Image (tube, rainbow, N blue to C red; front, side, top):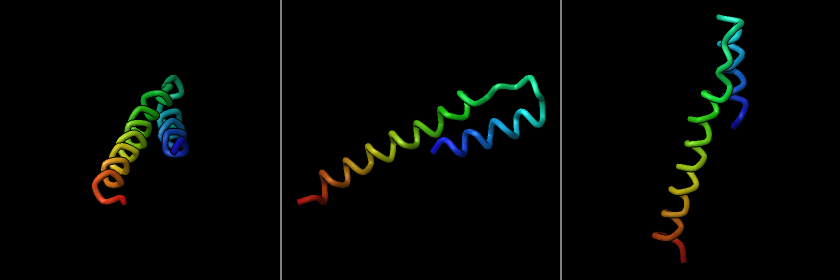
Length: 49
């Protein structure tokens, strides 16, 4: 998960050395993990034994 944020940060730093977008890039990554966990929980609740 954090690798995509690091790559985004690296691209941003290459473009403008004053950029620091690591935390901004981590937000969507964390949201995706939380969303996936919620979806998995719903799937298990609906289809699980």
